[in-house]
Length: 113
Length: 110
Image (tube, rainbow over all chains, first blue to last red; front, side, top):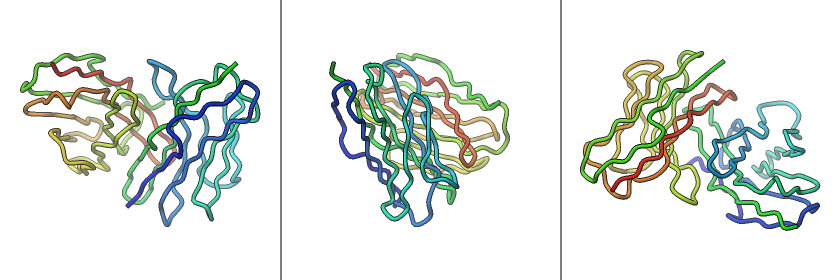
């Protein structure tokens, strides 16, 4: 069955440290891949997405993600965390066959001063 | 541009009462449509999705049902609400890599 797994429901980093949020999907055909951020009491905001082409995708706020087909992964990174990055992050996969759009469980990112 | 209208923003209903949440889409035709529930502190759980009029796929067994009577209308319903139906309900739509979201409905069942 199609699924999206985000490893770690809570990730804590220090300000200025590397941010790494992990996402793995299960599918024999690469889906469209997305990362969304959700600030408290707000809706989902698109950070970046992978469709086809270049496997390293750059998004807003300095985030980027790399699609690795061999690892069925789409991990989100940011070289230097900022306090304003504290939020909930969701990985999502849109499976073209059947049209299913699945979100991971979410990862809450905390940034310590 | 694509827009999803979802209402109401908040809803308080007694246990055992019926529910009808409506989601309408503008700016696109024949989108895939989705209903999600986000419980407090948890992720987005896919409840139903639809690839066309009258076509509904259910992801989890539950007290809810969905219908798509028109191309741009997606309705989430229940005949009798349970306490466990409380949560944040989000409608979403999309075609291929283009996705868009409603503003959500916070449902409290008391």
